[in-house]
Length: 112
Image (cartoon, rainbow, N blue to C red):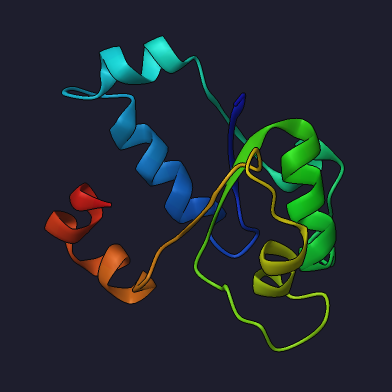
């Protein structure tokens, strides 16, 4: 795994999360992993890229996607991509279950 990709709707929130992960007590762990925070344009995606394309690009680029939108409301949704394309070697997708709480509650954000 090379790094983390923030879903286009979470970029600012994930930048704050990564910033926290680069400080104590997480500094040594972050440095050991050598991960990088990627944005859509870093990996050839656009804000209009469909979820299946995003999932496939994450797998190809070896980056973990962090999102708060993991529904199965279309054939190209993220949940559909995970259910149909996932293999035992696929990287996971991390989903923030409650974005409003993540944004407003530091203790919850720290647990995330």
